[in-house]
Length: 280
Image (cartoon, rainbow, N blue to C red; front, side, top):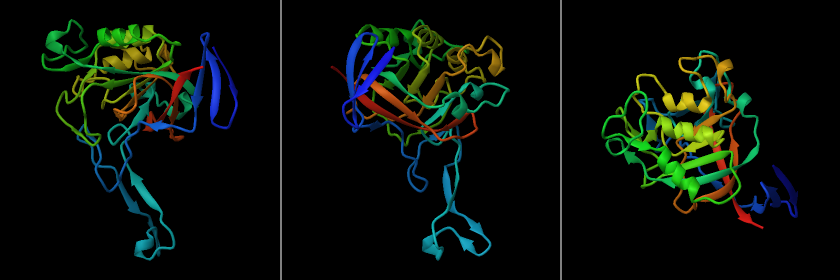
C-alpha cells in the first residue's frame, strides 16, 4: 500500500509496505531510445526503417523548407521493430486488444536490476522450443539472485538491464540476435507479482521460435494453446522492449512513469521515465 504527501511541486514523501520513502519528480531519467526518423535507428526482424515525409494535400505541402506555411509530417513506423515500445496481451491473441486501454496510466514502484545472460549450454533452464547451445538466456537464477540482494518494498514493475554495452541503434538480425527469457524466468516474474516488465532487449522471446512466444504467453497468463484475451489470467500485464538504460542509472528502486500514446493497437511507442527513490 502506498500513501503519499507532497512538500513541494516536485518532492513527494510516501510510505510503501511500511517503508518511508521520498522521490524528486524534477529529475527524470528517460530510458527510451529517441526515434530519429532521419538518423540512426535500431532495426529488428527485418522491418523497414521508420520514416517521416511531408503531408501533401492539393496545393499544401507540410514542409516550411519547401514553401509550406507550417510543418506537418506523415510518420510511418512499426512499434514492435523501430524503437522502445510497450505491448499487451493483444500481441499474441486473436482478439484485437489495445495497449492504451489495458494500461490507463499510473505511477508504480519499479526495481532496476542488471543481470548477466547465461549461455544455454551452461544453463539448466530452457524454453519452448529448446534453446540452441549458443543462445544467451536471461534466467530465473539470475533474477532470483538480484531479488535476494534487494531489501526494499515489493515492486510491481521490474526493469532488466543485461550486462555488456550495446549500441541503442543496433541492427538485430538472425534467429537469436540477443538474449531472451527462459520459461523459468517468466514463471519467476509471475510468482513475484511483477505486472510491468521493461527489457533492454528486442523481445522477451527468441526471434525465431516458431511462433511459440513462450515467455510472452507465460507472463500474460495465457493457458497453453489459448489465443483468447479473455482467458488471460494477467490481462493488465505489459512488456516494454528495446529500452536503453544508461550505465549512469544505478540499480535500485524507482518510481516508473510509463508514458504511451492512446493508440488502439496491441503495442505503441513508449517513453519510460524513472525517478530515483530514496529512504526518508
